[in-house]
Length: 323
Image 1 (spheres, one colour):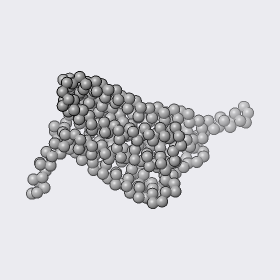
Image 2: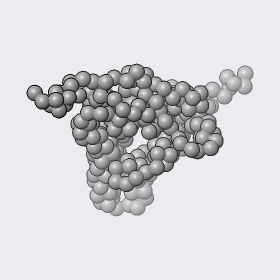
Image 3: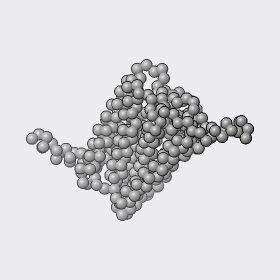
Image 4: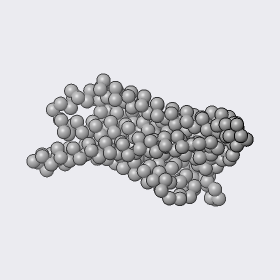
């Protein structure tokens, strides 16, 4: 065996595990700490909003239905996703603790991506609920049952768990013998695998699979359900009935728009052209944090059942407060 072949063999069989990574964050932006304070405010309101929505669903028995199991799951996912990301971002940059242990970094990446995937596929489950409600109204309660929704949600969590575990596992096979500076605001998958010294083609491929799985497949399925809904609504003679049916979809459509459009725009920009790291950080933080903040507000204000339930709870609680 020649010297070059022997060197290649050593590189392929030896994995360099760094003790820690350095998260770079913003570069050359004055007063960046104010942006992190803004994120702190977003996180507090996210916890309050999603906690409130989950409490309403839990306390009001009329909301103990299959549809609101999905809404509860989305609120829980938003809460967990924000908790996985924002507190660590604040700790990293407000308190200047930018070094993160290797194992902790992979765990950080795992949970942020896991809950982002779950949020995406929960929106698909919501689209399925609206599809059955409008296209098969007489069979809705026999198709969309609590056990059926529970199975769908559990299968989603299991499938996403497998995919994100694969992403983390492939990162663990990389050797990091060069720079350990992550050009992002958290332990993001792309910036980490690009630091690898050995072949990271598998990581590159699974990044594309992840993008397709989190954005394009869910968005395609949601679009197909709304095409079917549009066809079903076109057969309804009364304009008032069409409008009433369409109103039940407005909350979901707004949630889909605020989640998918920024996510898709940021990732496509990164993959097709140069995006300044500071621009990517701002876009990514807002993409990960703002939908979780807005989701409970939109569902509370735009859903008549939830508004009635909130008023009912307030009437029951108010006399006790006055006393």
